[in-house]
Length: 486
Length: 119
Image 1 (cartoon, each protein chain N blue to C red):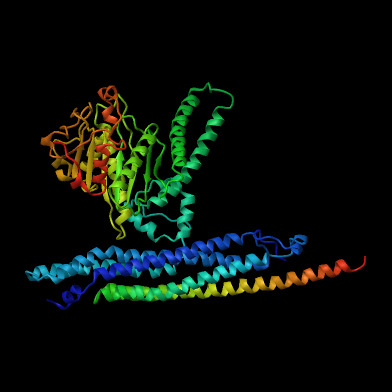
Image 2 (tube, rainbow over the protein chains, first blue to last red):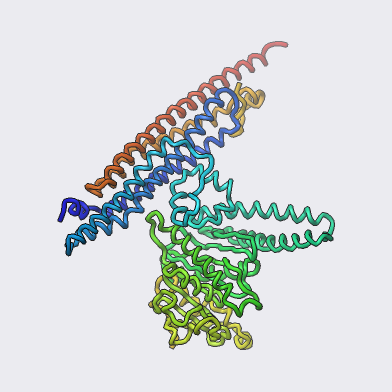
């Protein structure tokens, strides 16, 4: 073994990770100091006169400097944490007896690459001490979610606050930002956009319905956007007392609209479920029902495991109406949007060395077709897939979904007329499809006339149902404990 | 001449001349708050060395070890400097608060004396 490999074999990834966490704790302390100083500065805001003219600018400068230092410490922590996995791999390989000189050289090259990457990022940190603060900040153009996460992590808190005020719309939609930051941005954007839309509507309707066709068309558009925005506003108000807070992850009023609301601490939860609704559940009509289902799933997950679970009510695609539902086009488009959102979710958790969550996508009805399209489009974004009352997932068997059959669960209630359609590929509930078939009986108290009229299709999330218990077991990583269909 | 800071209740004398003073209590609070944050920064500066030193020690013979040592020293120095400046500012605000209290008391005494003087 060469001297270099002997040294690499002594690399201690665990200690490295621990010191990386210590740096984050120190950065948090500086961030809290920044917040305290900001508060002090605000409390002295009414002070006027020559002494104030000298003291307040100094205090402002100190506040910004502490914020800058917090950002630099976070940058250093991120550099270390991002390298930990590579350090562990290199050390593990270096301790194994190399089969050949070529293998030894490959291990040495891997170690040098990891080392170089971390060293370069760490060395860049002190440069931030002398660089003048930018007036504006943003991730490099064309950045993916992982780059966005790294940019945001290293951004000093005062610039974060500034950017949230300046550009809430673009930050709210920026994949890779932590859920908390996206929520702040989207809530601010929601209040601004509601003010703007209401003002424009009042302007167009001063004393009755406008007679110009262009104005009438605009009113229709405004009413559509207002319906979505006011629906979200009402939903957030109804969730105001919830702890942890509900997070408004996505707010897009263009076209059919896109909304995603997270329940639970998405940035830290052990398990994340993404609930994808089906026909008719677009941003205008699907928020209440989808959030209710996500909430029921969260509660059941808490009964099934002591580990924490967050659920996302993902109304993030143009859900079809009766006319569009026979076709898979909206599922394909929705699948790409869902894949992008799952990608962003993963990046926000892991881009700087954080722990990934166990992610389950739960698709109901046409939403299961969307979920199928997403995992086909980007395999590996979900750990488990649950398909409830599915008319098909654009696949002929489970192997096309990029997940083993033991991680794809299909629930079909006995009297669900949609579940056996097999309209989009094979019927996932068929044995030949290869998925795990879970019992999905509706809860008690449903009348037979209701069941015979197809009511089973909408009962998969009912409290007390075997279906909800099974879905929650999958969500909390207890897929082995589901009750299976005979 | 300083104008009143909006925080804190006004003393009876201050109500008579709201344009004369900054609120001494607010200034004293600000000085204490700055001092508390100075203490936080001083602790962070001390802890930075072991944290980045630990990174260096856990990766012997690496470029990262050298970079961690250099970065740790630079950051710790910057945090120490910031702590020293906060210390200065906290001291100045605390001294100003004490000074304003003295001025307030002497002004109050003057007002009382003037009130006793026959017209």
